[in-house]
Length: 129
Image (cartoon, rainbow, N blue to C red; front, top):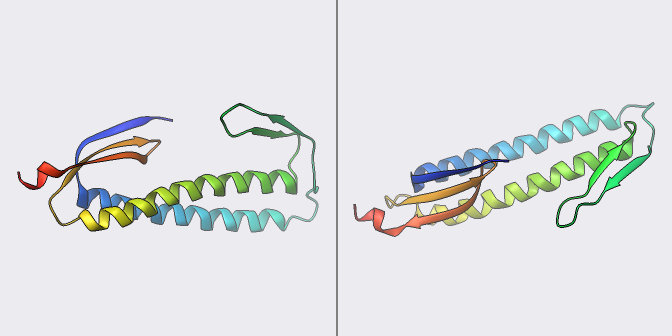
């Protein structure tokens, strides 16, 4: 995971990026659902397989399955959906807040964590310049 910073970005541009990324997350979820539907349709896929759980404190536990199974795919897709829901929630909140600030000529500093905005600081003086 990487951290990037935009020193000075127009709120309008940031708002546009938020809408694009929100749409991208929605498309990922649709794609995951299609793949999951195909995988669950496989007849000879076992229901369960042996698994190893690596529990790391203050983190998401890592689960390793010895063979593909319905349980393994269900776990994999549910984790992916959880992470995408978190990302979508970030974009949903940002969309609501930035929609009120766009079209005012404001700029912001944005810190990203793995391409998801994690901190947005609005420069209120930028409208005067």
